[in-house]
Image 1 (tube, rainbow, N blue to C red):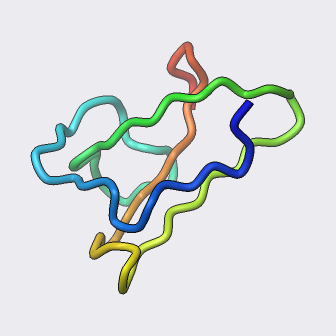
Image 2: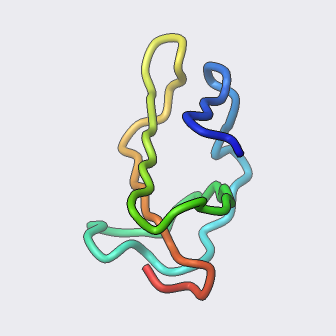
Length: 74
């Protein structure tokens, strides 16, 4: 089990990413350039995702995030 996993600073990029899937329900626009991550939850109580950007953590501006279930439900 991976708990509290975190990538190294600026490990991922949206350069060359696709605009696939549907936009999140509260997004003003998009999808634009998606980067997908897959994980298996180990409980039904809580899942938390965080995106850190700026300085050593990366240069992404105006990010949108969403969490989908495996069947595509947002």
